[in-house]
Length: 130
Image (cartoon, rainbow, N blue to C red):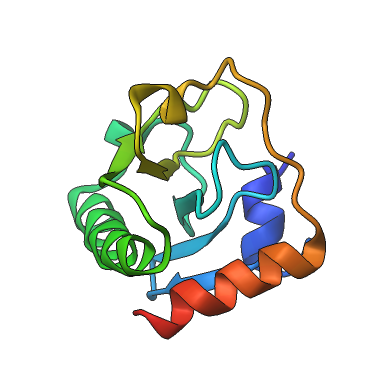
């Protein structure tokens, strides 16, 4: 069964697109820890990050780096945190999270529930800073 990320990549489920390459896709987390929380996923469905082939992993990290600069220009924060957890979705992915405190990347805290309009505005802002 395809993961939710594979369905997003295929276009079966809409997303707030940020950027993509031939092998990777970046989009907003719809239930972010903080505003500007972006997911970067390989287009190839592989469960664990370090099971990706080296070229795909490098592409994923290059896109993550590029997007992190755009997030930092878009969201007031001290830095961009990165997390790889992958327990909820069996598809490798990287979380890019704007940080002002260590608690901003605490996955046990309640998630935000922004409107679709707020998500689209954030996606536009981040894309404008790519």
